[in-house]
Length: 259
Length: 317
Image (cartoon, rainbow over all chains, first blue to last red; front, side):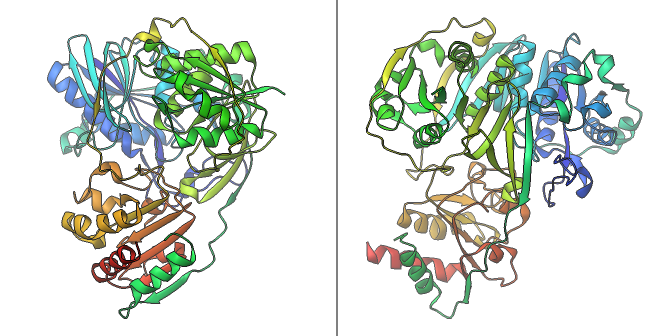
């Protein structure tokens, strides 16, 4: 059972995020760079599956030079190797380009399972796993909060509005896992040391046979025309409770016609 | 006028409100055509016509919903190729965004997710980074595929009627590779859905316990007919189930009214609620950053203020 987990390096979700004033892309320098939190659940799920069924976990990421740190961080949870797609021409790529590049990096490697976190905490589109499944013509088992592998059969619980769907497929498949699907482990000292020496393959667009004119900001399928900070809200009325706090809220609710 | 395809979310004959909102937005871009998939699709035609759909494409074959997402994306791809619509509008649900993603791949078209408005020229408005930044963007290649958040506009009753057109699609093998074998409904509270609710009553660290949610937060929500939300501090502590978490890594809500109780207002939380139309804050700490978002705030103990408020609302009823 060989599993590839796709991770993204993102700005810390506890920090203010900004767009770059020069090209409207994410200002990656404005906050600490971390492994997308939801991807940690994907790494944990992969490790649990190989612990039960044997095999290895590889970490794949597309991103600037610094993203290599996040790949090693993810490896230190217990994975074996990393693949880093890094190319200046990728700057500003949208989800379609990202899914194209990831699919190229994944195809022909014989992974039985490809696991994603269900969304990134910066873009929050939640579309890349579905797009990669579509590009690779693999079953899409997304928004899973439970994953069971039995031989070549895979079954997940897909989170829905009303509860969940049980979904079955045959490997190989693409999976995305939701937050809290498991408890991601802390890297052990031994694994942190091992991650420093883990094999890391760095691939450029030409290594993948992807034409640079199909990716990057200028070739994105959509363009940002403008952006602005949300205007600050006018200060509201703040009262200190002296026993009449609830009565004041009631007045506000009535004035605003909520009750 | 060219068609605008709108993917309808429904449960049997029950059409979700967001679908009707999307028809109203579609009317500003062209001639709205609804696309309804799965069992019960035919029962939605009349209400869709009353809300502005000129045509309703009905694909009610059972196998359209027997597999994850791909059948709907393949149907839409076929309609895009046949009808050359001006745009395709899809609700910004988890499933809707996945349909949009697959459709974008299949038609080599640009996709914009989580829009809150679409101008006549196709420029979409998005609130990104939890609403801190407002972005205007436009699809520049292929047929614009735009997913739109709930509560972005009000449904509009035109009183018209739609022409029903039955459609079928020959599903590919890969579309049938992830099979739904069972649908499990988890017991509902009877409260409105968190992401669609007009009012959300939310609790954070200051609520103090799961008992606090049951005895302070839920009664206020029920008195107002509101949904219950929770901050990450509260869900991480196990006081309230994770699926009710509002914030950066949880749900994003944009209700008419958000009542934040015992929530300090870390970015993590504000990112999930700062586009709410009105905000009421109750917090002991006068310096809590959540007060910056308040239209009305009370510095005080939620354990006394909220039960008093709940009783007052009930006494009015």
